[in-house]
Structures are given as C-alpha cells and as structure tokens.
Amino acid sequence: MASSSQSTLLPPCSVGQDERPRRIGVEIEFAGLPAADILNVMHGCFGGTVVKHSHFEHELTDSELGTFALELDAQQLKQLAQSYEAGQKNDEDSLLDDFSMELLSLAAEQFVPWEIVTAPFEFAQLHRLDDMVHQLRQRGAKGTRESLRFAFGVHLNMELPDLQAATILAYMRAYFCLYDWIALQEDIDLVRRVTPYINHFPQSYVEKVINLNYQPALSELIDDYLEANPTRNRSLDMLPLFTYLDEQRVRRVVHDQRVTARPTLHYRLPNCDIDNPNWSIDSIWREWLQVEHLAQDQEKLAKVCRVFRLELQRLTRFIDDDWAVQCQHWLVDLDTQ
Image (tube, rainbow, N blue to C red; front, side):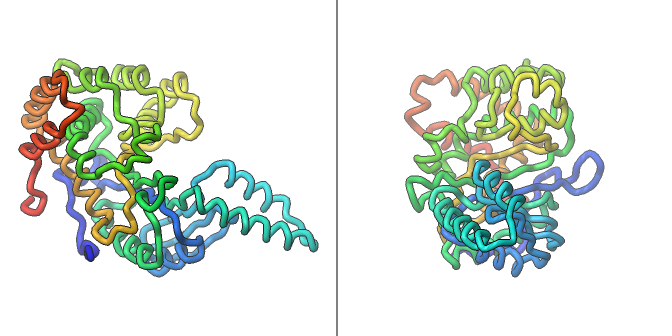
C-alpha cells in the first residue's frame, strides 16, 4: 500500500512575484460514497465546520487548509436543489419533498461524481491531501477505472511565479514538450480520452508556441490562444488565467459562464484513481514538477523545443511512444533536488 507523503517536494521557484509562497487549489472527482461519509473524512483530517447548502452542495469551513467545497458536479442538479431549498415550506408535503430529493441525490451519485474543491493553499501543504485520499479509499471511494461511465479526473490549479508573458509562455512550452510523457505515465482512461474535456492542443498551435522565434506580448499570447482554443476543454486550460489578466479580451470570444477568472494554470489531464492503493495526489504532483523544472531551465527548455519541433514532423509519432521515451532524457531526479 502506498503510504502518505510526509512532505511535499517543491518546484525550483516556490515563491510568487509578491514574495509569498505559491499556492495551489485541487479538485478531486470520485463516486461510491454518500456526502455524509465524505464530510466525516474531510472533517476528521482538517477540522472545521460542516455547512449544508443543499442536498448537492456542502462546505467545510474554517478548516486547517481553509474552505473545502463538496458538490455533485452537475449544474442542473445544483440549481434544482437550490430552488427546492429556497421554496421549502414547513408542512406535511415537505417530508415527501425531502425524501424525493434524497432519492434524486442517490440516483445522481450513480452517474455524476462528487467533487471536492479546496481553497488555494501553499504548495508545501499538498501532501496533507493524501491522508484524506487514503481514508476515502478505505471507505469505498471509486475512481476513473471503476466504471465505463466514470470519466473522473483530478485538477490542479497552480499559481505561477509571476504573470509575465515570458513566464506563461515558458510553462506552456514545457507542458507541450512533456505532454506525451505525462500522458503515458497517467495511462489516460479510455472514457476520458473519448470525452472532449481533456483534449490536447491542435498541433498547429503547439508548433507556433514552441517556435523559439515566437515571443509574443501578453495581448498577442492571449489572442493567439483564443483563436486556436476558444474552449475550456483543454488538458491545460489557460482560460481562467487569461480571464484574470484580461477579462474583456476573453469574454469577446468565449461566452461560457463556467470560465472564472483565477491567477492560475488549470491542469485537467490526470485520472482520479482514488481506489488504486498505489495512487496518490503526490504521484500527480511529481509529474507536474517535471514541467516546473523544465520551465525554469531556459537553456534546457530551448533545446527541448528545438528537438520537439523536429519530432512533430515525424509521420509515425502518433502510433508509438518514441517521444515519451525520449523525454526521459530531459527529466530531473526529483529525489536529489
């Protein structure tokens, strides 16, 4: 059984431009447990106060890691629950209505994941989620591979060292170059691969970004991204960050109200294998740390971009794992850093 990490490995640059530690928010999708059991685990791990907003929306407030949200990840269900709670009356019919909502909640849990959403907290605290994951697993939480209808994932929302165009570009380049290796490590579940939620970027856009002659100002970087990717459905969703930096520019192109402004990258690729005893949030974090190290090494990043541009012209690259294997040469030994 994988043990919970006792500390979190930090990236080469772990502070932001305001000289405070960088922060991360985490979203974990899974099934198999009722809300009460999940909340008991969360409260046992982090303390705080449980608040019920509806049958489908709960919070853990004032915990050791801030506020957690727990919700069934379906907008229509949440709206229905909110309407019910707002119109509830103290009469005999309310008992029947409450029972109906419970039945709806139980039915929804068979198709819609519960999602734990953390508040932003410092990178150094990330390992603390692994104890929660372990306890949820012991109680019967089910992840991506449990069922063909479970396209569950884990999302990481990382603050950047700064919000300059050159820094954002470096992270995008590092991610594009290492994507094949990360996807091979993750062994992305078939159901998740055929859904649009974690689509990779068009090759023409990848080629543009990794071209070392591409040195856009922030406005150009955002415009080029929106032209090629006017959607949330990317494995590294940049819309929250670009909305934070220039909301009007993004809203002119993307009208999806689910896009919220955040000063973070929105990394959506990893599976949620919560029922696998060898899986942890730390394993996902270690994959992302390779992006951090490459983005911070300008000389190595330039070299990898040049080699990857040639790789993209290889006709058989989509039917083998050659580039993913070659990426091993660019990785750092995290345990000696």
